[in-house]
View 1 (cartoon, rainbow, N blue to C red):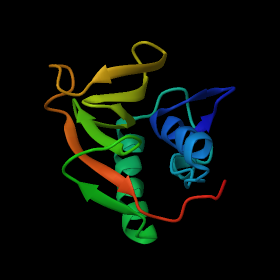
View 2 (cartoon, rainbow, N blue to C red; view 1 turned 180 degrees about the vertical axis):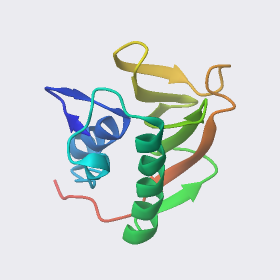
View 3 (cartoon, one colour; view 1 turned 135 degrees about the horizontal axis):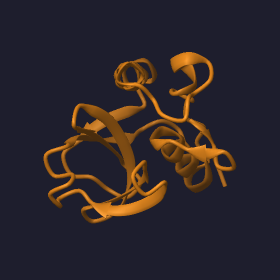
View 4 (cartoon, helix red, strand yellow; view 1 turned 90 degrees about the vertical axis):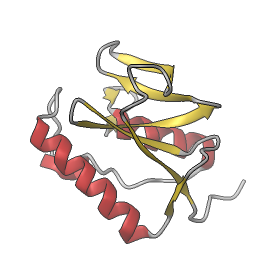
Length: 131
């Protein structure tokens, strides 16, 4: 959550990309975790994030799991037990908010850091905003 001025977490980045690139307002999932987000989420907060993301996919009916990702699909990852997400920006690459780098980075999901962490890819199938 949060915003592009205060800093974005992984879902906040996804939401910002969807808002600016597709005109779609995604639910602020992370805001529902605790009312106000700490600088670092606990393992419990992150587990609740995954539960909320799964519930949002089911509730809205606007997300479909896909085997072959395309531009702007959401990639779901879990590294060292922590959930994470990003946006597909090219073949085998995704944009994500990096806690280690403290900014947004583009990385390949088939490099050792991420290849075993990929849980799936999801495509938004809802109605997009008009021009």
